[in-house]
Length: 385
Image (cartoon, rainbow, N blue to C red):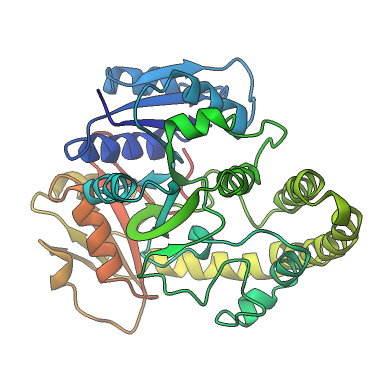
């Protein structure tokens, strides 16, 4: 019997998803598993493209975008393994990830769900890896930015539990839906994700029901890469609206007595966030884009033992062909005072090694990319195809 069913919901992310599926295949060398991909009517050739490359994966084609919760439940219904792994299509997991989380489940029968240490494409920790429930105060601090201003405060930073050491395991209330390892029998018993949540909030709600069922949710520091922003654009006005609607559903369901008060407070915060988002879009983002263009023209290091293929496409991928250096390992790249691009060839490293290298050698001046040898293109944070 296979131990894990990995359930992935896709929407127009075929190249990111291919990389995710390759990393999951690698992880199955440590823990036996099966993968189910539900496509939410991407309207492109995502599934045709992937079915040829992954014959062992079960693909489900929805005729409409039914939302994250409902699509995942379609996969849950087919799961006949000990555990279900809910995974985003813009993630990379290592072989250690699945092994470590399944081992923790086996050794901790009180554990209902596990989340992990998520880092972005450049190796920097993502605070949503561990969260608390969105009480009125916690939501207020998040939406008004107090948790960002005081990241280590136990008073202001409760939403993302920033004061908890990211490199140690912890019992936490809420896990992120980008990676959740769940007990299959328990998940089916409590009804899977609540389909009232179209997008956002369903992971929070499921975490709440796990705890209500006397189970414990754990955060483990085993790392994965999450290209945050590829599934959703968190800086957009639409995101703010959807997030508010999800919070309101959560309050109405789990805190009915204070729902009206939460609605007033959170709505005020939403207006504040919309103003900030408008400023970001019209003023800050254009300046950031100028900086990104400068980064494109900076030095580029290709970490590969056979870089000719990469050189043939580098200009088409938006990189400058000037100032290119070749290395056989990330360790060989010197420390610089300016921004550099680093392209890692996936033929020379497995995904666990790629993750470890990016985290170990992370730096605010380093921008990491992965050369996808199967498609002869470069996968970068924020890339859409």
